[in-house]
Length: 89
Image 1 (cartoon, rainbow, N blue to C red):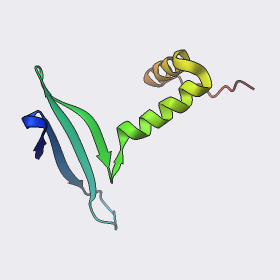
Image 2: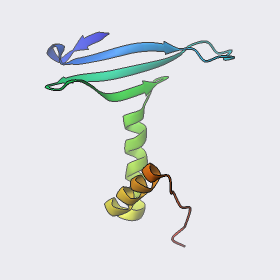
Image 3: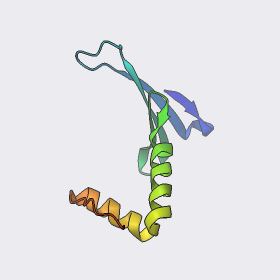
Image 4: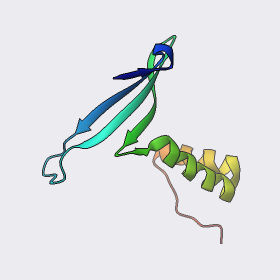
């Protein structure tokens, strides 16, 4: 782990190897922050792509289309497994 921010932040670097993968291991890095309740993951980077950045961009697009209420409804639907594909024509 690479420590930072006075010992309150750590990046855990891992390599993941999938069966039948000719490309070799892939990198998955977990950025963690120490809280009063213990260490919490606040970002995951897969092959250099930050999931926080990816989701921030997706959320911004959804907010621009349907507003914050639309984003919340979309996330609720995804979590319940009932995502609809209706369009607003």
